[in-house]
Image (cartoon, helix red, strand yellow):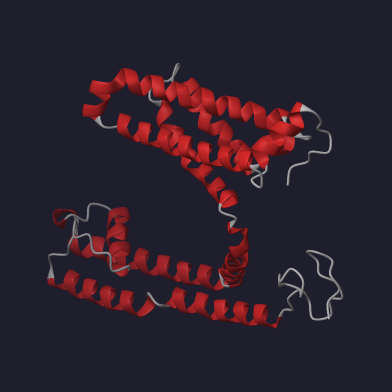
Length: 273
């Protein structure tokens, strides 16, 4: 929550519209902003199509500058209507908002730089405020907790996989050689990764009998280890859900996450039974 203790008058009114979604004006502002972001992304995508760019280049340029000016005004208003502007400027969304408008201005100096405007898609994350998806944050917290708990095990697993693909890729480079498409060890490692993960693009394939035997072993190995990370995360998810089920819920607001000996709700302050 951004600080608004130092606001008054028109700055407070703008703050309520931009940062609060509880009011009709706030909801309308967020929906309008999200639509503008989506349209600006579509404009950038259409400009990358040669036929569209050649026929509608002037219209696309006008639309892009309209969107950029709109987002520039919004960015400035967000800065002036908060009590501590630096907190917003250096926040995640503050930096995303800045990067979303800079490329168009840079394109005046560096042609083609405006394609970085695709970063605007990150700003659509604001839709979570409109839809009040905070109610579902507990589930995401459980997933994140499980991923953090399984981080070391997954890191060891990834290291083991990297060791396998480096060894097998190097062997395949020696066995098949450049004449069969394995032009370097890095390219052979790429083949090993594609094969081990069972993706199988087919752009490189072994031609010799020994190479095909090694490829078959790697394919079977891929099927045997592909379930390892899933099992690790599943176990941690089960443990996290079990711990969450043991946590007490507030009788007033219904939120969980309280310790067994908690006397008051840490969200609303209600006395716990």
